[in-house]
Length: 402
Image (cartoon, rainbow, N blue to C red; front, side, top):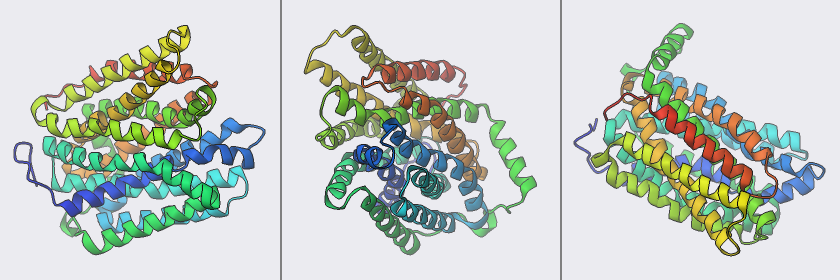
């Protein structure tokens, strides 16, 4: 296992594979964004804002799924858990393909999210099996740098698929992507958790393990901060397409702008990979949160006072979105690494607990934020500004010298 001071260059196949597994979630969300107007028109014409729940229902399923993915991987190994998750994800995508009403679509999206939890959570546990401390944070940053290519191209892919065959066809593409990952992991990735280190799937031991995880102050603080950061992210994903369409009349070019935002924001993960060894994880997180707060305050101020005229108001929105997405690369990997640092013997359980709690809490925060959308960026900017301020307050409770 690689420790803080002796980071070795990770195998390229491993980094690319982990990036592909992590991309399952980004693809499942971002490729759907251009489809939201069509889904609203065909399945929810009387309440078009409900189409946003296609995003948060997937995230909700993912949050619930993380409760099970980690412990299952601790008991049966990392590879079987990832393969089973990918199979469930594909089954949910198939249900979405055949859905002919919004409720059926949302139910299938929850199933799809349940399956998507395994690649993300068990992938993190697999990384923890091999790395720890700042080395783990740096490897996660390298993976996130590659991973950010998916948000850059996913909306364009979604738009192209919709133009070719309608929004239902997107789910067949999800099935193909899951199959590719399944073959990649099954044939080319060795198991990282030896049978001698596995924990039996015993309810009493699971409860004991969960108590041990939640007894760690750093886990609770990291989870709370991740909840607030992800709440801002999911709220942004739910509303951004609508802002482009209704505020700026740029619905057709949204995938191109979203791709540009994703590419520029990838510098966050790249910067973290270069700087985290020198500055430390907590300082990187704090800097990103201050950036989120300042950018959101500026956007909210412009939305309330209408200080900027076109095209400067649109440029401000783009700069704000880049800051929000860049903050993901500067915070999430560091927070996960800090939370998992003292829990290597419970990496699967710890990864599950942190991801499940932060994701479900983020959905609870993001859903009212998305439904508050009024055609402008003001509700979103105010909400994200509040989340960033709260996260900075919670981060002060973290007593760690990384």
